[in-house]
Image (cartoon, rainbow, N blue to C red; front, side, top):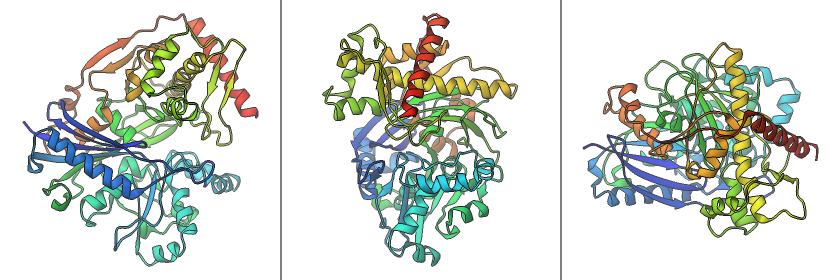
Amino acid sequence: MTFILALDQGTSSSRSLVVAADGRILAKAQQETQQYYPRTDWVEHDPQEILDTQFRTARQAIEQAGLRPQDIHAIGITNQRETTVLWDRQTGQALHKAIVWQDRRAEDFCAQLREQGHEATITGKTGLPIDAYFSASKLRWLLDSVPGARERAARGELAFGTIDSWLIWHLSGGKVHATDVSNASRTLLYNIHSQQWDDELLALFNIPASVLPQVQSSASEFGHCSPEILGSPIPICGVAGDQQSALFGQACTTPGMAKNTYGTGCFLLMHCGSQVPQSHNGLIATSAAHHGDAPAYALEGSVFIGGAVVQWLRDGLGALEHSAQVEELARSVPDAQGVRLVPAFTGLGAPYWDAQVRGTITGLTRASTMAHIARAALDSIAYQSAAVLQAMNRDVQANGGPALHELRVDGGACANNLLMQFQADLLGLPVVRPVTIETTALGAAYLAGLGSGLYSGLPEIAALWQCDRVFEPIMSRDEAQNLMLSWEQAVRQARTY
C-alpha cells in the first residue's frame, strides 16, 4: 500500500491526514489556530503558529498511522486561499501577521480602483471583481504599512505568498518559492487567460514582480521536504487552494459537475472545462486545479460566512457549548417562525458583492426564542448557497450549457442532516454527500498522487469517489420559491441600513 500525506491548512485549524492510495483516510490530526481582530473588519493569523501547528499535526498523523516518514510517497498541500504573507527571504521570518481572506482593511483602495474605471480591465484578465477579499490589495497594504518593506521588496529581499507558498518555502528549507495556478488565480495579479503574472495588474496595485512565487501546475513536483521537518525528503507533488482541491476531491473534473463546501464560508464551484466562463450574475471565474499544460477553469460563488455563523452562536452569543449542538437546538422548533438571519459579518460575497452591509436579524417577535435564531442561522447557510446556485444556473444556461442536475457537498457542516435536507428543498435538486467528506484534504492527496505518478489519470481518481447519502427535495417548488423571496427581502433590508 502507498501512502500520501495531505496538509490542510484552513482558516480555523491546521490538519494533516494520511491517505492510502485507495482513498481511505488512515489517520488524522488537527489543531485549532487563533484568529486576531486588531480592529473592526481586520482579521489576522500568526504565520509562525500556522507552521508550528501544521508540522506538528503532520508528525502526529504519520505516527498515528503507524508509519515512518520514509513510508510517505508524496505530500499534498491545500490551504485557505487569498490569505497573504510577506516574509524575509534570508531569515524566513514574516514581517507582519498574515492578513486573512476575510479581512476588509484594503476596501478603500479597492473602491478607488473601481471609481477610476479599472473594473473591466481587472475582471477581464483575472475573472475576479475588484475586492479586498483577494490578495493583491492586502499585499499592497503590507508593502506600504510595514516600515521599509517597499524598499526591501525593490531590492529583492522579500517574498510574498498565500499560505501554500508559505508552507512550501519552509517545508523545503527556503529552497522553493512557488504556488499553483489555483492559488495564483485568487490574487488579482494573475492573468487566467495567458496563465502568467500580468505586468499591467502589477502596476495597478504597485506590486514589484520580485516578490512573486513561481506558478506551477497543481499536480507537479514543487520540491522536497527538508529531512529536518518530517524526517525524510518527501516530494511535494500536489498543491491547490482549498476550494479547487475540494472540487478535485469530489471528482468534479468534467464540465457541468459542481460541489459546495460548507466550512467557515461556503464555496460553490462548477467545473467549466478548458474555456474561461463568463458570469453576468455576480459569480467569478477561477482556475481549477489541473495536471499538465492544459488549463482548466471553474465558475465560483463565495459565501463569506457559512459555518462561522454557528461559531458566532457558540462564542459570540454563548448559545451553544459545542458547535455540534446547533442541529438539536434548531430541530426543537418546526421552522424559524419568520426569523431571518443575514450573517454579513464581513459583508456579503456572491452574488451580491456588498462590502458595506452588516449582519442583521429580521422577523423577531415576542415569541422568538434562541431555538428560532439557531434555526435561522442554519437556514442562512442554505439560503446563501441557494442564491449562488441560482445565479450559477442563469450563467450556465445563458452560455448554452445544461442546468445543474445534482450538487455534491462536503465540509464539516454537511454532516448536519437538517441543513442538507433544507438545502435540497430550496434547490429542488438532489444533494449528494460522499462517504468521505474530507474532500479538501482528499483532493490534495489525489493531486499529489497524480503529480508523483501514483495514479494513471483522472478516471482512476474518479472511480475512488463513493456516495454516502442522497437528500432528495420534498418541499413544493412554490413553498421553496416563497422562502427564497423572503430571504432576498431580508438581504434587501440588511443592505439599506
